[in-house]
Length: 329
Ligand code: BTN
Image (cartoon, rainbow, N blue to C red; front, side, top):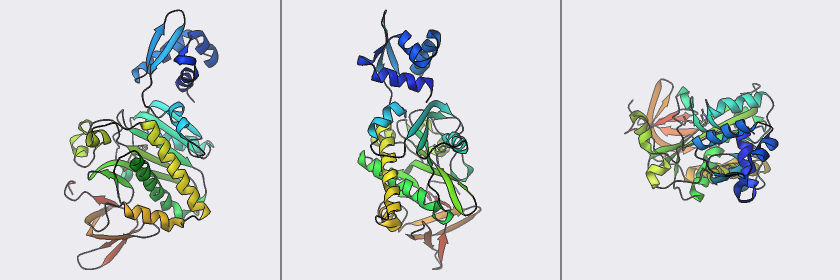
């Protein structure tokens, strides 16, 4: 946990949010000048403090950042979120989580950031990550066969769907694992796995949620197919509560899968029930190739069946469904 995160925790535990500079400096092992600098940086991130003369600082406003001190109180009996590392800015939370995984970080680590400067999407695309969004990566260290690797992302999209529904956000799932609101993308998932050729050693599941900022902040090409919760619903979501709910749902889905409750077929049925894609005429890009047809089914492994105009059914393991009338080919 960073000094700033520890500082927030101390303020939140202090009676009436009031704490002296000296107490902070002793508890954190840094100078009073360093404390003052951290206070200024926290103010840049939306925290507000009132100076209490001769007493210290009082925390008067806490922004809804994805910090351990704000997320953890909403987590109960959840292995995911065992450690939550927030920073005001990271290149990519997936990169940080992968580095930490390589150096032995434990299952359930969640890396978050207020902004990303090099956010990455699927197919090597850049991912716009301004302040107000939710940018986080979950380390899942539960070995499984490579053939089951895709299950994890399907599970993640169902977990996000459930969490959004619980917060009154009526999303739909677009194959393989995007979430749409009013037909435009609000969430994408980028899973990166480390394998030994046969099994998955760990997976980093990166989730980007366009939450509390306006769609106008996207460049014009992105604005065509992406939107934000704030723009669509004209209200903000409480980001720490939404993250806690996503982690809880994913943990539960994962446990049910492991203990055999319903098995993967139950997850797939839930995915299908909320799918935007099925029954529609779509175009799918697979590398350089584009296939057009009606999306008929997604099987237990997440493979999409697409019936072309010639009646031939294509089994599509990975690709990108194009927003046919919105996205240029
Ligand atoms: C997509 O292309 O739909 C996937 C987007 C995934 C974005 C998230 S934001 C948090 C994590 N860090 C990244 O750099 N990417 C993922």
